[in-house]
Image (cartoon, rainbow, N blue to C red; front, side):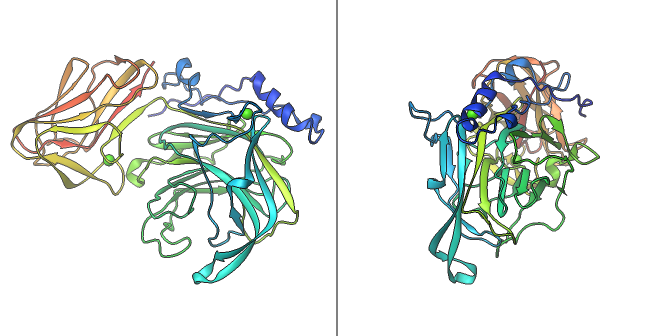
Length: 437
Ligand SMILES: [Ca+2]
Ligand SMILES: [Ca+2]
């Protein structure tokens, strides 16, 4: 259950206005438009773990201050470039040359510029007449609060977006993508309209758009904000929790009622996703200007809870003792299965070790896969406490294995260890550390 949501705090950050001024006073003289957008921290809900230390320490951050002494240069340790050339509805080729960093902004240039010899529909060779671009984070993330501040381009024909999906930018429609969260999409032919989406993708990917389920969890277009998003910076955010999603504009929740959107892991894969900051020529309206630009002031991701799922490569899950197999029993998220050790053998061990960014007090949960032949007496040990869990009764789901919140240091010093009893099949899937205070 989620406590009732209070409005997120929106303190003004001094450095934010400096960047905005630096970017635009010199180039456009639009001083009257430079009032900095409110900088919204993660949505503060009393007691839900968004503590001051977590808010002060984003898990991912780029202020776009450059890698060079003059403040230019994309930090390619953090980012891949979007470089796709064609898909349905895509009218531009994306190039690294269109992406730059200057004056505290990441800038995507949108150009009327021919690219010949592009492989188009059904293998035909076409010429694309526009170029766009964007950045895709090399790191992937899951639950938490994501936010960027953007001044949208003003001329029609372009599709700007801050979105979350698997992929490295070379192909928008990768075959291993599943979860897509569009924090916003703006078609610059309609600069007062904004769209938010959750999409679920599943194989087979036989063509552009194929594989998308017809019933998407959430698509909403056209928030009537009464403002033109291209005239000033605005912040766009999403709070992705295990069971829900809330979208924000300028720190205000804008999710269509009822909010937040129910989005449980039983309904989708909830795969870790990369952050995409992109602008491309797309749709039926072709660009009318020969050049335009979009400005991204910063992007941040805050994390308060930690999940160690065996499906996530490098998550910290291990099977140090015994022989383990993949089970046909469903797991924590849709479509993924679980693990089990040789049945009726005691002493099999699975471990989960999160990489904790911020020391604090956490509740720890084990995902219990209930089945008639599961282990009836698994020992879940963490931080000197051991809790016995029965896998034969009740409902598959989270079981708290800490009587009270435990103090967890930063780093990888805290491990949850599960040991089989010898009665039934011990099962392993996921453990979570939920920040309490
Ligand atoms: Ca900046
Ligand atoms: Ca899993």
